[in-house]
Amino acid sequence: MVFIEYRSTCYSSDGSIKYVFDVPAKGFHQSLHKKFKKGERKSGIESAFFNIPNREDNKPEYVLCLSSQAGCVYNCFICANMFDSFYGCLSLDEINEQMGMTLSRDGNLEKILSEDAVEYAFMAMGEPLYGNNVIKAIQKHEPYVADTRFSLSTIGAPGTIDRLTNSDLPYPIRLELSLHFPNDKLRRQWLIHDELFFKKDPELTISTMLDEAEKYAQKHPGKITLNYVLIDGINNMEHNIDEILKILEGRSDIFYVKVMWPNITSSSVFSWGETGSLKQSKRYSPNKFKERLQEKGIPATLFKSKGTDIAAGCGMMTTRFRGKRGIVHAEELRIPQADPSKLGF
Ligand code: SF4
Image (cartoon, rainbow, N blue to C red; front, top):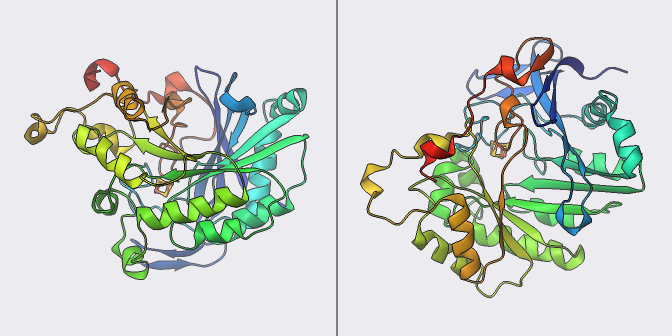
């Protein structure tokens, strides 16, 4: 049975591969004020296959990055899905088919078989804990290789991490939380750009998210990542480090901060160098920010996305720029890269 339709493949100069698929749009689209009937309109989803050797903690070197929604219900300003992009959650069948179609191309299945290990990361388009389909897909997954792991990054809406904690999970699932901002006020300004979610969920706060994550870690041991993309003059200052220290105060040492290099299509990079009123503040580059966190006793790493030249990096996958059908190489896409010299590093 065909649930999604292959559209194109994009090859990065660093070996990463991105796949674009068409899926039927479904549900209610906010900006179009329209509910789509089955088959009435198509939308796009994207997945990617990454080879990341020598990962810490013996994590699998092959990673399939998968979408959970067409667009995203949350429209965060740090993400290419930032404006009314949502065309519905993927069904269980669509998730499975996306995984199968990604593995069936470019010898990807053979690659994971050769290592006998793989990580499926629900970190492409969409919030994976919105609804139950991702959890169900994990529960029903038939493994191709012995070392099969999952990971997902979530905005941490109240009750969603608890739901994951209380589910039967047949595979290890590594949790990443989209912290990105050190206080609830900034989070409300930059993430989940729909007030409705905050009205419905007044508990949509950093402390609720961390409380639920701690409960998850008690049941499923392992470190929990706090993703933090730097936005110059907004969240990369000394007092932001103190705020992070405060929100982690008294928490167990299960969390570490992943300082993320900004990618060009996440709006984060637009702010670099344009924050005149904040020029007096001490602002840090991603590497320096990571070092300052470590100096203050907060475990931290620096992360640079792969596949940025094909818009497969963090925050770059979107339904909007689906490209033409067929094979596309990075040089044809001409996606601008975050240029360190322009970012003042
Ligand atoms: S950052 Fe995540 S939750 Fe926010 S719009 Fe992008 S995919 Fe959705």
